[in-house]
Amino acid sequence: MAIFKDHNITVKQLLGFIPEALIANLSLTTKIDHYAKVLHGNKLFYLLLYGILDNDRLSQRSLEDTFNDSVFKILFNLDEDEKVRRSSISERLSRVDPDYFRQIYEFIYEQFSGVYTLTQRKQYNLIRVDSTIVSETAGKLSEGIVNPGSSKKAVKYSLAFDGMLPGLAQVFTNPKYINEDNALPEVVMAHVKKEPGHQNIYVLDRGLQSTRTMKAFSENQVTFICRAKENRKFELIQSLIVEGQDMDMGESMLLRDGIVRLYTGIPIANKRGNKHYREELVESTFRLVIVKSKAQEGKEYWLLTNDFSLPAKEIAQAYRRRWDIEVFFRFLKQELNTSHLVSLNKNGLQVMLYMTLITSMLVLIYKKANKQGYKTSKRRFAMEVRDLAIALIVVQCGGEPGLFFKT
Image (cartoon, helix red, strand yellow):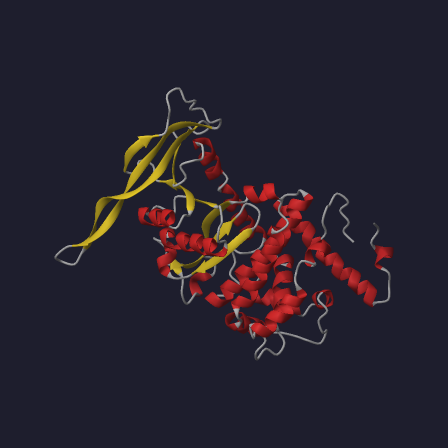
């Protein structure tokens, strides 16, 4: 087999985290196999998992070929005589219960996040929240988001990412969610609901600008850090910079740190029924930290938060770590095919997102344990899966895998 002697964990060990009993039990509780002749829940689960790993450009046609491949059937102990067509896969994705895949995804997330040490848990209390848009082939979507200046429909995937694993995911196809001020708060509050008593700090980019949302976060005791638009209008209540304070923060310089009140727009309808907005100050107070980059001349970062205890330097460092989710999105698109839509209805989109995130968690744990990059981890993970299948073929043929795979 593909033996990488410097590895601390193998694919075979990771596949052991996939709960066979849970998959079987969910087939009953979710009624996922109701009316299914061939593509039962467990078979669809393994088909999508293997398909995501084995194909550079996943499609319903490639999934058909994968299911009908003898190597896939041997690896997951399926009947050699079973066959499926692309149309059956398409119909199954459009009707199958996404909750089946959501529950498996959440179970595996809990399994993996439970192995963090206490130090790592504190590190991963920083939750990055952001969205990515996928528009390739999405013009046929019955419902979708349309970007300004474009006629092409798109899908928005929004995630809460702890720096190691994706802890929550949502699919948005309703046009109102083109505005991140609508999408991101839903993701944040859904993640808060999952973790009662949490001590998380939610870090967001400039997509979140609504003062009313920030006020709601504070009222619900949700700590956040987000990037404001430069020159945003505010009223300074109190400066937090003390005389003689060192303004050098390493990679940046501190320009301002203070308690502020923000303006919000109040919708007003005139006599003709046209809506305009009147600016009003919100009573809630926030903290504004403005830093200037040393590397980029003239580049300033305006950071808003409702955390008044962290040093300004840690506020800036927390925002910089938001970039982890951008790297994760790039990994999903470049290595796990999310830039190509396998299904064109929301039901199938949810299934594919959960399966992609399940696959990503397996690869990410493999990556972390073996101290590798994204591309190397995906390549070696797929190599080990392939060799597991070959070993099973050798055994079925009465041979000894060790005679071929030298350790």
